[in-house]
Amino acid sequence: MGALRMDFRSGFRLILWAGCAAALILTTLLTGCAPGSGEYFWGDNQPVLDLDVPRPLDEASGSFEGEWELSGTRLSTHAALHIRWNRRSDGGRIEIFSSLSARRLRSLTGDLRSGKVSTIESKAGELTLEARGWSSMSSTMSGTWHFEPDPAYARRTAELLRSRPDESQWLQLLFAEVDTWYMAALCDATVEKPTVDELLRTRSNGVTEDYLKDISWTGARFHPEDIIRLRQHGVPADFLASAVAVDRQFTVDQIIRLRQHGVPSDFLESVRRTDPWITVGKIVQMRQHGIPKELFATAKKIDSRLTVDEIVKMRQHGVTADFLADIKHIETRCSTDDIIRLRQQGVTADFLRQIKESGGQYSIDDVIRLRQQGVDGNYVKSLNVPGRPPLDADTIIHLRQRGVDAETAHKLRE
Image (cartoon, rainbow, N blue to C red; front, side):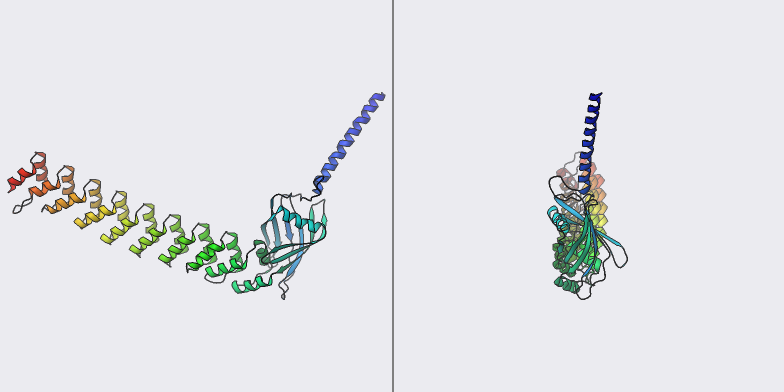
């Protein structure tokens, strides 16, 4: 019986010890403290800085202030600080992410925990956070904040932008880290001064300062939304410059279409030089069908009435620029279908020239039939002697099939 009570007391102590250990672990997790480290880690999935609706702007300095609350996550190498604030104008909520190193975020929260002022800085100005209190149980801090715009930055925004930033836009400029060089580059590339929202949208869509400078060097000017679209569709600045040089009337949609279909700059320049009135749709059509710029230039030089559809059709049937030029030089009346048929039937320019020089009046059908029957061009020339009417294609083919050689046929004709 004594042994039983001893076992019971030992078991109870074991259970009590395990419960205390679990409570200690739970408390550690709730307070976010890593045992033995003394470092503070947030307990949610992501650091969140929540800024309350700011009080009105100070007209003299442009500064404004409000209240904040900070909650967050376990720190890693880099942390995306999730920032939220309400707009005074319509009560809408702005949410952005600002990448901070783990060291920077630890410094920020460490200062606030110890009651010190912590500052988030950028080109636009400084956001100063002053702690009023923090709770280890809920892993949150709170206090007041004050934003002071940089005076030089504020002057440049007045010069380069269409309107002054409001409270919400100042905070966006702060966290987006938009410098005045970028602002000036956008202003130079646009048809008119951009708004703050256009500036922020351009920056957030990955339009770089170099891209803006390259656009301004072309001499063309675009709306910010058009610049964003050009960038999103991967239009390089050098291609844009070439397109603008070819035709300043190209729309953004047309430039994007040309780029999407892989129209090279040299092809675009050559085609437009050959035919200044050709449409973007026809340029794309030629590129899709692999029309060499040399073929288009040759075709238009030989016969300006040739359409893109006819040139595409010839290309599809293996007609080259040299073949087209040679045939058209010998027989200007050849239609597109005639040239294609000659190419398909293996009629060379030399053969056509020999038939043409024989003195007879032979149609394209006759030329093809003579070629199909193995009649040599010189054979036709031998049969057609001066002072005698030329033989027709059927007679020539008949003589050839009967084995009458060119010399014998020539003597019989004399």
